Image 1 (cartoon, rainbow, N blue to C red):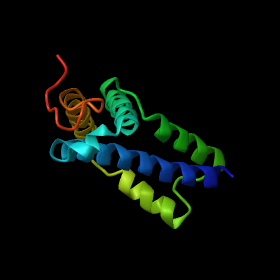
Image 2 (image 1 turned 30 degrees about the vertical axis):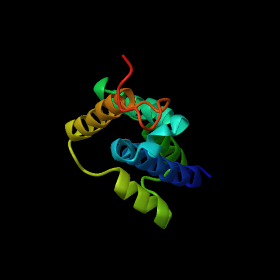
Image 3 (image 1 turned 180 degrees about the vertical axis):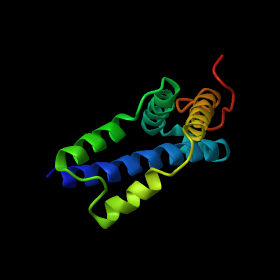
Image 4 (image 1 turned 90 degrees about the vertical axis):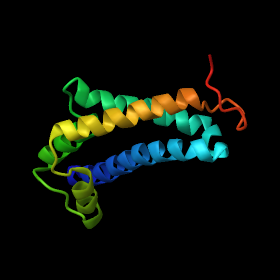
Amino acid sequence: MGENLSDILVVLHLLWATFMIAGVALAIVGIFRPGWRRLMKLRTIHLAGIVFTASVPLWGGICPLTRWEDVLRVGAGITAPRSFLADLAYRLLYINVPIWVITLATTSAAVTTVVLYVMYPPWRSAGNHKAIS
């Protein structure tokens, strides 16, 4: 059972990472397509998520989803995903780069998201490009 749960969790973890990356891209696109920036719930969830995601390596922590995956795998007595989809998600999610690269990327994404959220807030009309003073 733990092996199935860990496989499901690694796929969900990849979906979360994809949402974090896509959210930054959509925030940037929102500069040019004002209708996209009015998705308040989506942008607010993304803002909170990317700030949390960026904070984890800054304080030397391990992502809670990674820790949970590890606990489930160890509990099931396995070391790698069992299904094709989970194996693919695992390979895409856990690339072999130094931690500083991940820290720089997530921090840059968080700063970009916060700046764009302030400069182009979702509660402002699409025609008004000024930040709130």
